[in-house]
Length: 457
Image (tube, rainbow, N blue to C red):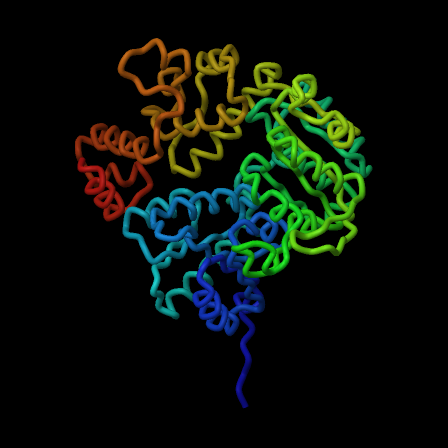
């Protein structure tokens, strides 16, 4: 009589995203013998919904979804979105095209492993088992994952933000439609998630839609779904995001970008709370909590006939305005400390603090990109800093970039450029000693040699 040995890997839930139906079938057939649940998905656009609504222990993500494209950019983009939704997610990237450089970059930006096609069954299973183990470690020790505040990853104790938190507490338990207004980078998506998590629908789906990225000809299909054969490329029936959000919350970001013709269709759905899939005469009742957001001047757009007044009245039962970072200066220091803690761990840098003179300069800076710009500035500074304390010279403020000839302007650095600069500085500091430089950078000698070869150093 055989003995069954329980192993935690067996209980894990796995998600596979790949545009090749044969790959999905083959990997599911292999992996369902090792894991209790294996979900497959061909359409990457459904990733936010799936990751928001199922707590997967590991995700196997293809890197290329467009025909004849093998750059891996799509995979990195979707990896970034997954980690935005769930910073503790364990993602294994999967591609037929790749080498050492792509694998190194994959690990650096947050993947836990990188598997090449055609895969070896044992190696693929081992990679996912390792991803499950890493996920378990993150759950047991939350400090492994990015720090979260008590306000759903929203940091702020300024009077302006306390008013925002107070409004969230008051409106979240209701089903009132909410319109979030604010500049780019102020955290409108985080506020929407906080409202959902404090609502009576917290255990139901939260579906976020970037309307600025939805093409006009696919608008109805994306939002309301379509039936098979509804149009040329409609090879299968599709569920729209409104139906995916049924019972929960739908977050329509960048709502100011919708053309007038489509605003009328959206208004009809919001008024009737019913949807019809493209190509179908049947209607379906939907039960959703609506949250919208924009950085555009909707009231001015009404005057210029670019936005419907009746649609605005429908979506803004409660209007919540987010302050710009320059309006909450007292929050800059805790935000900077938060991102410093996050990125010094990510890049294994022994940076201890932020110099007082730098902090003063940060508090005088205008931060046109708000919290998002501050986050990216801290990340660059952590990578490039030569000392253990961040100094003003470690930052590239927009004003400095325009004043200093020969320097790259704000935001023009690619991660690879920053890595090359960091390695160059470390090698110089260690007088070319590979062992010492690798130790300081938190790399193995082999990993550092690969980077030296990659950058021609």
